[in-house]
Image (tube, rainbow, N blue to C red):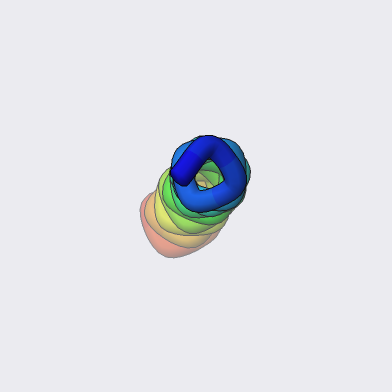
Length: 35
């Protein structure tokens, strides 16, 4: 059970990092299009 929680937390962190990456890419994309 503990192992499951640890892996879930790791997955959650990875998921958030991926979301931040996509957000950054999206912002960069908008900036490139606006110029």
